[in-house]
Length: 262
Image 1 (spheres, rainbow, N blue to C red):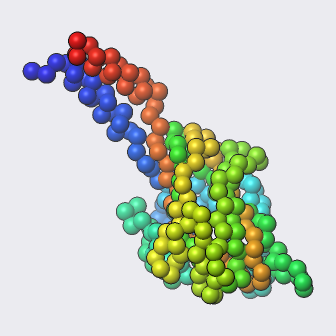
Image 2 (image 1 turned 90 degrees about the vertical axis):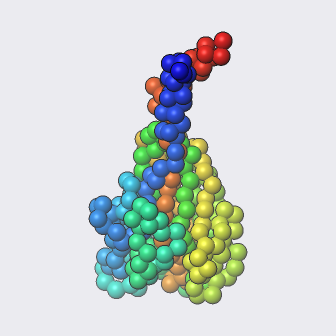
Image 3 (image 1 turned 135 degrees about the horizontal axis):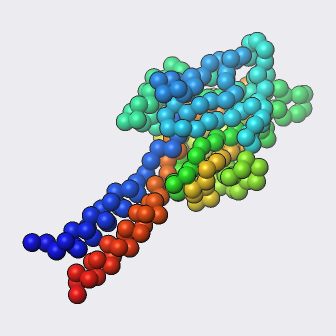
C-alpha cells in the first residue's frame, strides 16, 4: 500500500501543476458577437471602442486609455483613419469559436488627411488594448496583418499598468514596399495574410498580475491618405499564476516527499 504522505505529495504537485497553463486573455475576430463582442462596420460607423469577441478586453481608438482619437468623417470615407475591410482566416482559433469568414472582420488603420507635401495625419497615432492580467503572467500575442504599398511601415508596441507611463516591448518594421495587398514584417513577424502566416510577439513580464494591463500600438511611415494596415484575429494569451495557497501546498508536498524518502 502506498504511504499516505506519498499520495498527498503527488496530489499536491498535480493540483499546482494543473493550474499553471496558458489561457486566452482576450481575442478579437471583429465579427463574432455571441459573447458580447463588437462587430466592425464601415465608416462612418466604424466603432472606436471595440470589445473583445472572446475573453475580456477592449480596444480603444477614441483618445482614452492611452489611445489617440482616430478621425472618422460624418459620412463617407474621405480622410477616414479607421475602416472595416474584408478579413482572413489566418490565426482564427476555431477551438475558442473564432470565425473563419473572410468577407468581414478586419480592422484597418488608414493614413487619413494628407496635406500637400505633408504626411498622413494618422502617423504617430496610437491604438490601445486594455484587459485584466490578475493572476496571469508572461503575456504574448499573435495576429494576422497586411499592409498596402503606402501603409504604415512601423509599429512601436509598448505596455503600461496605468495607461500613462509606457514601457517598450518591441518594434515591428516592414521589410518591403508592399504590392497593394500585403507586406512582410521583420522582428517577431513571421508572415502576412496572403501566404497564411501568423505574426507572433514574444512574451513580456511587464504586465504580470496587473489589474489594468495596457498594450499600445503606435503607427508610422504611411505615405498616402488611403494607405492602410489591416489587422485580424488578435489572440492575447498568458500563463496562470498559482494561487499563494497552491504554492504553500507545493511546499508541503516537498516536505512530505522528503519524509517518505527517509
